[in-house]
Image 1: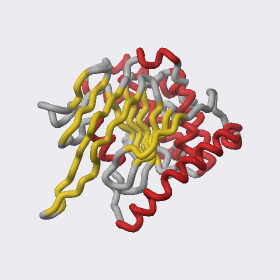
Image 2: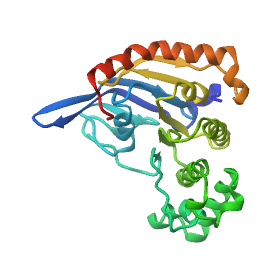
Image 3: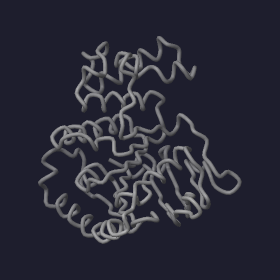
Length: 280
C-alpha cells in the first residue's frame, strides 16, 4: 500500500530518542527509554509489545496528552515536542481512537460523527453533516445515519468512531487497540474495512495492539518492543501485497511473519509477566 513515493506524502513521523518516566510515590517508573522510530507518510505502523511496556505512553506523547523527558517527535519535519517544547500541542492533525467507545448515546450516528468540527467551529453544521454522511456511507452505514449507537453492533460502533476520527482529514490516525473487545470474526471484517478506508484516505496510522495476527495483517511495518521501558527490539517489514483479504490469513508468508513476531515477543512477554508490569 505504501508506494515508492510515500516519503513525499504528508504524515512522515519521526521519533528520536524518546524518554518518558512517571512518578510513583517516592520513586519513578521509566516507561519509555531511548525510543526511536521512522514512519513514512501514509504508512501503517503497528506497535506490538507486552502489557505495561509503554506502548500507550508513546501514543499519548505523539497525541500531545503528556510531555516527554528527552528526545523529540517531528511530523513532516515540524517539531511537535523536544528541546524547548516538552509537550506537543493537541491538534486536528493527530486524532486518537481509544479502546473504549466514546460515542454519545443520545445523539444519532450522523450527529456523533459531525459533532467535533461543529463544536470546534472548524465546519458549519450543514457542511459537517454532509461530510459525516459521506464518511458513514463509505463505512457501509448509509442506512444507519439516523440510528443511535445503542442500536448498532460493536463492530458498527467502531466504524462510526473511525469515521468521526476522519472528519478533520487528520495527518496521523492514532489507534489504541480499537478492536480489542471484538470477536475474531468481527475483527477480521474490521481489518479489511480499515485497509479499504486507508486505501481511500491514506493517513499515516500508528496502531497499538497485542494481537500479532492483527499486526501482520494490517501493518506495513510491525515494531516489536521490549518489556518496560519501551524501545524497539525489532522491526518487521511486512512484504505481503495489497489488497489483503481473508485468504491472506492462510498464506505461507503471513504465517511465517506471525511466527517470527511471536518468537521475538516471547522473551519480552516473559520478562513483563515476571515483573508484574501494569499497563502504561
